Length: 441
Image (tube, rainbow, N blue to C red):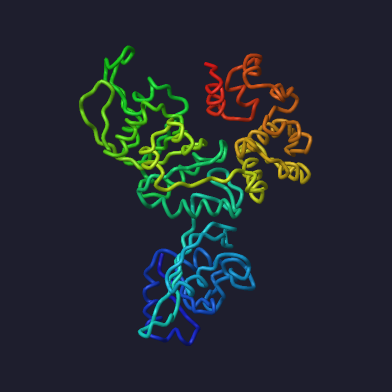
């Protein structure tokens, strides 16, 4: 596609330095603009015009905050972080994640702004580079991360900063907050996005299986090892290894995991051959690893290796502004290819009032069950009320878990563990952990 000319209508754009900036922008593939101290766009390259201009009309002479936010005043006067204002104060670059209005609708945009100095040390202009974040959506979406609240945006901004590096990332937060989706977003925004994304469910592996599953084994290494089997570390070569619920790794295996991370080497079970690992590490847990270290249940040296960049994911109760967006996204997924699902305003209000102890997973379960009873495609308040908070019981099904201890419910429940987990509105992994804590095999 031919590059559109970059133009300016401001008198100071005739200065040699600004003219050089305009010439530079013409050859940039990322959206970029030149601003003056009054937030006026002096120049915009073709990529900006295509992605953010929309109408085909020149954007030069427009105020940046009108283009991006449809505001009548700068972002800082509207209660948001303004990178130009911050760059003026710092006399240096600033980065921020904003939600911009675009021809496609609201989108998360990573903004980097740099001041340009003249020979006397004064700021003559500002260059702003914009990058649309593809791993999250600020409008209803059929897949991936969805949100636009301030807590969600803070996490997304942290993710954007760390993803291009090779630093290990530790995702912390309650069960059901979407740790695997955030881990996948780290992978997709890294240089390893074309490689595999391999999930290791640490809570579902016994001590005897952990080493074999992670490192693989040779034929004859133990009873039942009838052939050589590559491990998940082999599978993750050139990509990302996601250790989900790393707090459940047996203490005896933590030293071997530490050795893998520190040395980048490992041996298959039953082999003397040293193999070299090549993966980006992302780990996650709902447990307090600090408390586990104090009790001697988690190695301190392993903790410092995996927690180079910790990110705490907010529970859904801290993201009330995202509930309507999440509901619309889940309904789009639940009805995909079959029918259109909608929700009544009073039912939506009921969902927005709930505390959601099971977080996003519980919300999804409630909506999926309610959709089964929405014969006309409309979810009503009685259908979402039929699933008790924290239980998620299906409409028309007695809430057998209400007030009953888990051990008692497990003993009396007539069905599989998968069905029990669905009845409680939790994942099978969460059910497994809770039963394990009670000593139930």
